[in-house]
Image 1 (tube, rainbow, N blue to C red):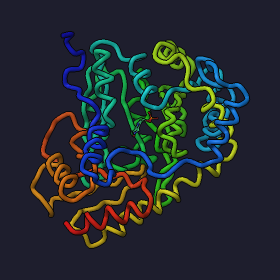
Image 2: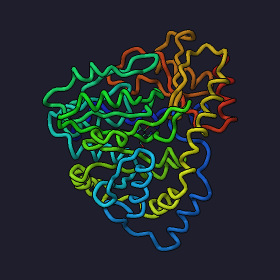
Image 3: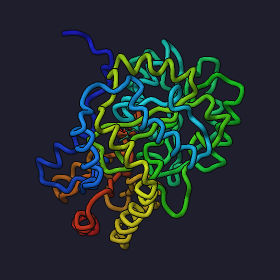
Image 4: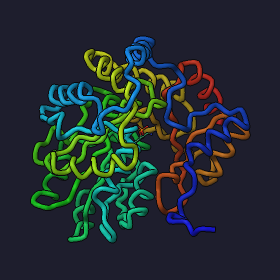
Length: 379
Ligand code: PMP
């Protein structure tokens, strides 16, 4: 048999947990997808685009109208101007954009800073390209970042820093001060920032999203990656984008064409149309804040320790008052004996140390949240 290029990488924990939840008929709060549908309006926009004959390849860089709408959106929200022609590329989801960006820029032995816990595709994508992940940990309970530690980790081999705000899995967010510190410690260097902003429209308690596009000096050496999946309840449509200065975009597109050539045409047309209605994405903060509040309130008086999520549709629950099991064992116990599943947070760390925190996705119908919390409150 051929030897594996990524021997330590298994199949995604998310699909494993979903399979197990189905097998034991447990309420699935593991994988990050809503159990409610996207709007009929948006579906009709796709149908309209297909009926009008938009069913062949889009341009490599994406449908122009969509790139134009993204440019306008970013300009109105973050005051940075990306040229739709030379600086925006539509991808088959953020996952593809992340892989493409890492493949385009990370060479053999280049170092890439990853902030742990981290979304699970970063590390294997770096390793597949011969790069070396360098891990810096966020600290419990607020999952704040230690910029001095990041600074100490930088050297002449550092090629990239991957940031993710709002942050999956912790629900932490970067403040303006965080972004200024990042800008300062990378100022004058050639380090590329890969900024994963897929939850940019899911922030709570009046906090505002700190995009790299708000910091022009940072934006000049960043790849801003986002996705429509979270914003429009369409994770299955797998469409996202990457915005970056022309020089970086050119290299990004060279790889993008090899990975997918171009993203799905009618879906791009539909997003271009719905982006004409900013209220559709602006309402998501409130929509998910209600879900977060409901989930937390329903767990009031339970034995879990809860630090309210500040963004994303994830909430961490610490269970050290309930059990001494490690997070994988405790999650298995929840699936088999309690009838609910989250995701063990150790899935987001490279070292399998003993953790006692699980991540729950609250992008679920209110009835699902009630049923799940009824079970969790009994523990
Ligand atoms: N980055 C983060 C932090 C995510 O949580 C996800 C989706 N779970 C992605 C990227 C991937 O997004 P997409 O589904 O558009 O590929």
